[in-house]
Picture 1: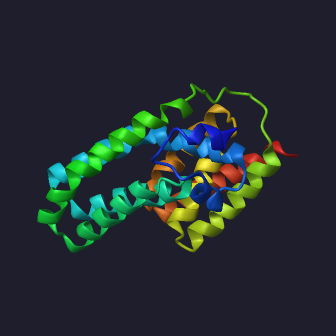
Picture 2: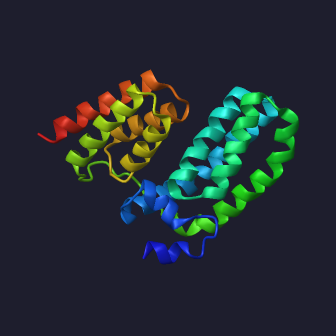
Length: 203
């Protein structure tokens, strides 16, 4: 049972996560996606710090903040929110004070969450539930049109629970990057292409 598994992970509040993701199956998928992305998030944050790129740092920690709240990683959510506020204010001195404890906490969270990593591949030709994919893609377009970055990121994570053929898989990877970088128009175009493919497959 997912709740029992999460009892050993002090960094995650199961009930806080359930407020955003009522279904355990989807919650587990998002936990897996979250931990797999942590090394990339850390690398991007470090690169922003090296360049002193406060605008991009704000984007990276905002994404981490939103995703952390969605899975119930509330302490990481609070730390990312504080770091985001400092990036907005371009308070480099305060960021210098916060960053080491922030990265240490990120490493602890990543280590604790390793139990959710499963090696999965999106095999070409594998059957999937096209109607659910279509519904998620339509909702994603609405989120992108309203500039709802948090909602869009959660929907992209939800879409990764399905299997895709090669063309769709590449579009999904591109879409994920576009949503992470707040490229709303480009992400909307990618989503519409995926929707067109899914609707053809559902006929």
